[in-house]
Each structure stands twice: as structure tokens, then as C-alpha cells.
Amino acid sequence: MPFYHKLGNIPHKRHIQFRKPDGSLYYEQLFGTIGFDGMSTNSYHEQRPTQVKAIKKQYSVAPKIAKSNNIQSYRLKGFQVKPENDYLESRKTILVNSDCAIVLAAPKESTKNYFYKNTDADELIFIHKGSGKLRTHLGNLDFKYGDYLLVPRGIIYKIDFNTEDNRLFIVESRRPIYTPKRYRNWFGQLLEHSPFCERDIRRPYELETNNESGDFLIKVKKQDDIIEMVYASHPFDVVGYDGYNYPYAFSIHDFEPITGRIHQPPPVHQTFETDAFVVCSFVPRLYDYHPQSIPAPYNHSNIDSDEVLYYVDGDFMSRNDIEAGHISLHPAGIPHGPHPGATERSIGKTKTDELAVMVDTFKPLKVTEEALKIADDSYYKSWLV
Ligand SMILES: [Fe+2]
Image (cartoon, rainbow, N blue to C red; front, side, top):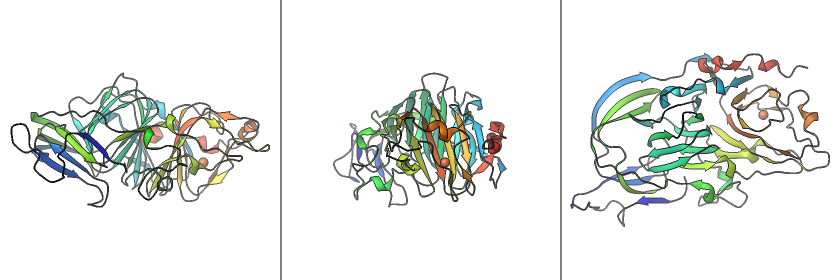
């Protein structure tokens, strides 16, 4: 996140002696991104963060591809993904390309016996159902319905859920996820025309510092494998850190919509960007106010991007038969648009309660076997009258 954050105790200069009450040194770790050019954090640990004790099981979690080259529009029924106890096992990749993976998960249990670290990708976790606490080695974040949790790659975390009824929509991104550049000034501050600002971004507020030795299992994701690594010290042993690279939360309910006299294009809904895809938030808002406006979108051809829309809540005006938890995939190369009747139905409407998350990828998405299990195979014909 491009603004400074400090939590816990740190010395007054970086890379100098920082001593524990017993006179011994804390262990400093520079946690950098993009070599030494990207955002970084300096953290101070009770024990060396390098104490690998054993490397145990290694297994692939690479998604099984059902359709590599896809031009068919799909409707996927996200809530048909079955709840599973374990957080990692519950994660089902439905769409994927070399830049990102779109994942659905319905975990019933908190992570108890292991820590998790994704070294391949930043994780953007949208909370559709559930609440709890994201616990990381750089501090904790409470979460609830409507939150985006941004976990940069390499952050060690656990996730605690308050109940068993949880639904997550996750984007794993091999490219760093940032806020849109056009909303930031040359120092990174979010500008006045941005639909959200730093005040809406929740930073870790609570640091867990455990100075424990033993066997601590971290499930590390690397190159689509999970590697089980046992460390000799507790991964949450940071006494303080500062810098720019840390997890944060942003609620979709804090996104202030941009509206106009005529239909506004999807970029006004943009919330996050990478150089490989964008994420947009469609939130309750007033409709266009030109006397002859048509609130429904026009037909459009995303000739060079696949469009994934995850429907969260409210009434989805441009679609027939869409419910919460559904996903539409409109692939690059062919036009799509409102369903028959939706354009006429939208005229005269003054507002919408829809809530949805959109991911537009610049490379085509492959459809996985997990996606076909929850797919409506006839959706691509749904514009016929
Ligand atoms: Fe679209």
C-alpha cells in the first residue's frame, strides 16, 4: 500500500542495533518487492526468520483445465461450491491464466494447525459471507461482509472465522495489485476525484508477538505447489515494523460511486489495478439523469479482455435469472450486453441496489473442471428471444 505504516516498537534508525531487554539483538528483516525497487517493510523478530527445520510434503494444487481456448459465455453458480472444513482445500480455482487465478471458497473452519504463505501471488480476498480476523505476521485485520482483504505475496497468515457460513471470492495475482494510478498524485496520495481515499483503508492494528520455539508448519504456495515447511520459531514473532508493504482491508461499502447524466463506463467503478487485469466495484448508486437516458449498459465488445462479474447482492438490472453468488464470464472477442427486455425495463429507473465485483483480464481465461461443475451450459444462448 503506498503509504507509510508503523506498528509496534522499532529503533530510531534502520539497520542499527536494536536490543531486547536482556541485551541480545532483535533480528531485522527487510521484506521487499520487485527486487529492491518496490514497496518494502522492515520488521524486527524475536528469532531468526530463517530457521527451516524440515521440508515435508510437496504436492501440486495446479487447477485442472477443462477449456484452454474459450469463446463461450458462461454463468457459474458460485454458491454451488460445497463448503469444506479446511481453508486451503476449500479454495476452488474456476478461471485462470498466466497472470491470475479466480477462486471460490466456502471454508467452514479457521486455520488452526498451520500458517499459509503464497509466494506466487498477491491475494485479493472478497468477503461475501462471514466475518472474523485475518492474522498475519505484520498484524491483524478484522473483516466482515463486503470487505476486500489485500494480502501481498509472502505475507504469512492465518484466517479465523466467527461462524461456519463463509463465502469468499478470491483473485490470486502474479502481478502486484495497486490502487488505480490515475487516482494518485506523484507521491501516491489518493486524489480528490478518487472514489475512496486513505481514510477508507484499514491497516493492521494489532501485532501478535510470540517468542516460542518448536515445530511450526507453514504451507508455502510456490509455482502452484504447496510445500509444507517446518520452522523452529513461531512465524508471528515480530515486535515492530514499518514501511509500505503490509496487508490491508477496504470495504466495498466505502466505495463512493461516480455517476453521470448518461451511462458511465466500467472504469468509473475501478478499485484496483495491475498491468494484467483490473478489479471494479459496482455499488448502490443513482442512475443516469439525462431525460432520455438508458440506465442499462449498451452492448459492448471487450475485444481484448475477458470480463468476469461476481454478483454479490441487490437486483441485477441488465441480467435475467442472476442471483447472488453467480458469476458471468463474457470472453474477449465477442459482444455481450443486456438480456432481452432489460434495456426497456431500465428506462425511468432512478437508482440501483446492485453490488458486484468485476475482474477484467487482458489475457483470455481458461475454464477449469471446477468451473464446469457449477456452470450453466446454456447461458451463452440467453440473448435469444
Ligand atoms: Fe460487460
